Image 1: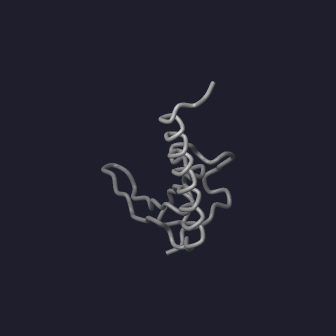
Image 2: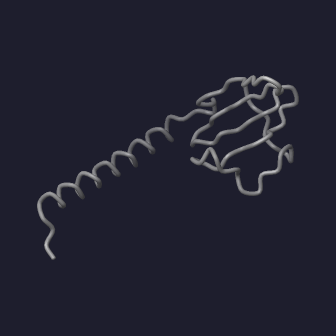
Length: 97
């Protein structure tokens, strides 16, 4: 069945948007540094402070600011999913200032 002009335009627009994302990803990866994208101490009532950090390409990590122990680390791009096989403190990298 032939594609009507509106469907064709929608598909072409989606393809162009996907290309734009690929180019933006390549650009961001090229210019990403070792510095965190975000890093700040989180203080919640009744809890010890923790260091929250986001690194390229979208990994959320939580550190104990006193010991440097990594308490939690997400999968790339999925901040709600714990990294597969993650064990708190098991040789976890310490945050860089």
